[in-house]
Image 1: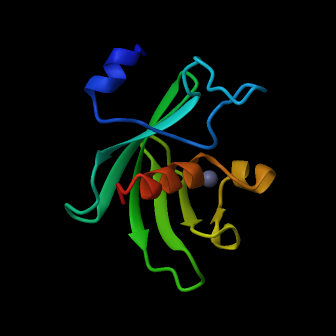
Image 2: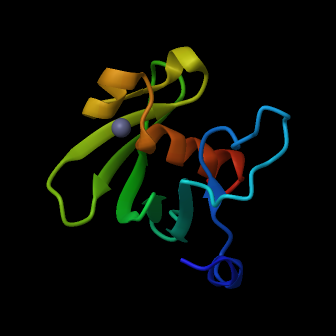
Length: 123
Ligand SMILES: [Zn+2]
């Protein structure tokens, strides 16, 4: 995807920390992960976002659900797939997801994506 294409669309939010060289300068390479809010949940509670990882792009629907154990809770569903994940974002201790990526690495695309949308004041 060309850079100018990204600028003409809604801005992508980059996930995770920025890529820095050992000298602390930003590298000129494109970000490897990004998220874009396609449909805002304020319309009817259902949001849609587009997650891009490397060359893979996937759309997710999400609904915020009440969370009484800390953080904000979301039910996240990848379009075209049957798996529904319950995701919590917030402080580190209030972060969780049911996917294998989170179980293995302690973070995942769902957590990073929703956090990026919240930090970008999209949600
Ligand atoms: Zn996950």
